[in-house]
Image (cartoon, rainbow, N blue to C red; front, side, top):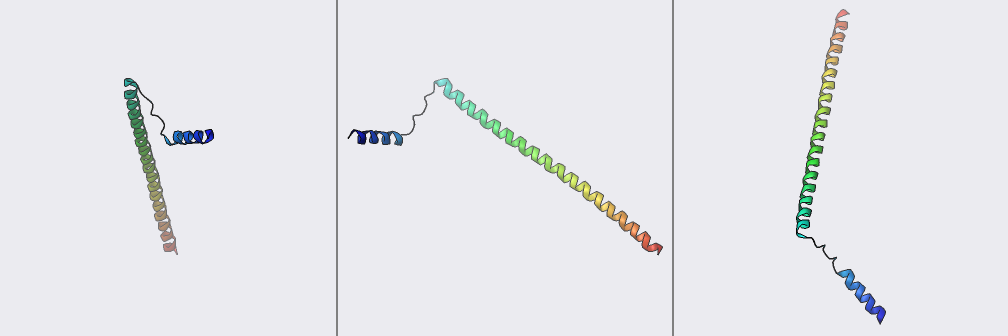
Length: 89
C-alpha cells in the first residue's frame, strides 16, 4: 500500500510544472534588459554576416566580370591573328 502511495505521489510531482523562479524587483527588470540586449546583439551579428556575404558576392562577381572581359579580349586578338594568317595565303 505504501508503494502505491509513493508511486501516486511521484506521478503527481512529474505532472506538475516546475516552479517558476521568483525574481526580486530589480532582477526581473535586469533579466528583461539582458534578453533585449542579447536579442539586439544577435540581430546586429546577423546583419553584419549578411553584409559580409553580400560584399563577398560582389567581389566574386567583379572577378568573374574581369575574367570574362579578358577572355573576350583574347578571343578577339586570336580571331584577328587568324584573319591575318588567312589573308597571307
